[in-house]
Image 1 (tube, one colour):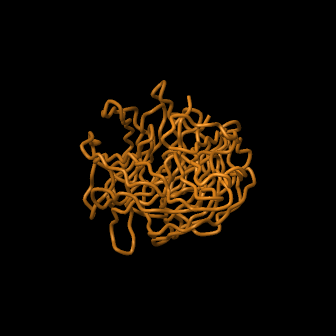
Image 2 (cartoon, rainbow, N blue to C red):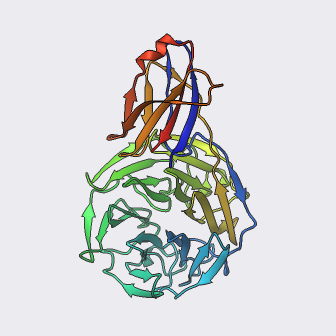
Image 3 (cartoon, rainbow, N blue to C red):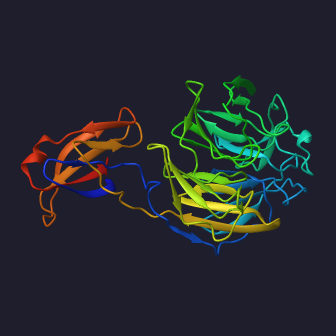
Length: 382
């Protein structure tokens, strides 16, 4: 089935437009928040979150200051219901969570009262099928507030709280149940957002205070690259990926608790602001299910919340830029058909070219466009 990612660019004589085949882009639209969703009970902040099989799993967490919990709950966005599951063996907050091979991993964390020297090395895996937990090889060192994310079949634990923050990168291989060291992140990192897009890990914000830095890690090359910084420096923010776009919501910045939501397009290395959260939020969790961003729990001015808020991003067509070529960006390996017509009143489009994006982008020039006062194009994924 063909799905149109972007549609209809009008071209002046001898010029072609640039357009992007990324699904709804970061330049794109505000979207809207749904706030009447079933709240979690008990409310809590600083949880670990991961999506498995269309459900959002929230593990651990506590209040806005000190207490911790071993609670594990699953939120079903379709039914708008919560289910209590087997509690985690080790109660903790500031815990990292990631899905790998259908299992939920809970990694590191803090046993309570905000003592950064009590960081945990415990690693536990939850099987949603059996509703059972099992232990895994512990981290080489205790870590909390780390960036925990799965990519290319392994789990990466990046930075985390030390005296303030660290830059160590640990890699967990489920095949050996072992940990190895990787190239350190170039900055001290903790308490920000860590996500993966197309096998690349992105570490955003956080730090000892409120940072705006963005770094991309390629697990295959074991190398870091600096990317465009986030417009709003922040820590304790919630982040998730929707249709290839990274959304970062809430947190704490120079102006205090934030409702700001910003979206990052890795394909273009650009940021834009989208519809803010209904209210400021700190230390919430985020997950994505079926093209929707969910922000769950957290603190607002030290008041704990169990709220669930959902952003359905809008779609838009970016501003038309006129160049002597057509640039197409999309997922590596995707196939895209370029169609054209010379009159929008016509009902039929003509297939012009089919392009497989073997790299991150390619360039196509329609030399016949100079013979028409206008030519219209659309991109259709195959």
